[in-house]
Image 1 (spheres, rainbow, N blue to C red):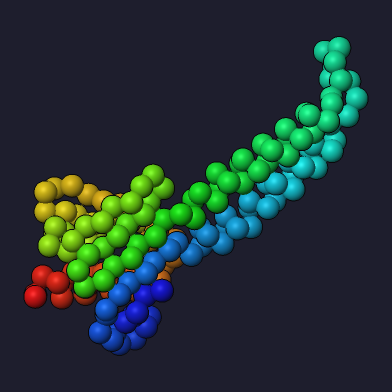
Image 2: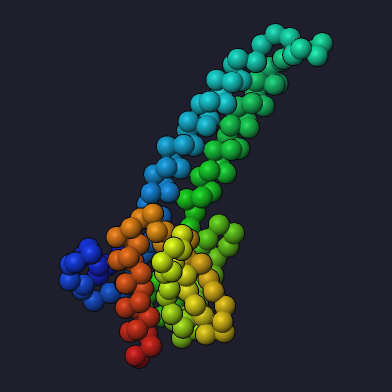
Length: 159
């Protein structure tokens, strides 16, 4: 949750911390993952009789189909992993593959391109760290979060 941001036109308070996760993506993933599991379990129950190649489906084939459903559901839920946690000293970014902790003094800007899927940190050494937790699909929540991060960055640069 973002502290200090009220909405597209609301006044902002003093920002001390920012916590962000993708909202729409999480909702979609938490709906889709159980559907995937149920679909694969139903397919597993439907595996009966001859395979068409001279063999027959067995219990192990049915269990394997359910296991594949669980595996695919975990892959979908992995997309809910990204988070951004920031305070007055640093920003911690967890994307799909790892965690990056960057002190504000190493950040040149918090950017969010017009057609970009998510925000990014532009670092002083010309590197870029994507902020996958702040997605354009979240609209005003993403805008408010970027504004709050920029306020933290400005406060850190001023001290």
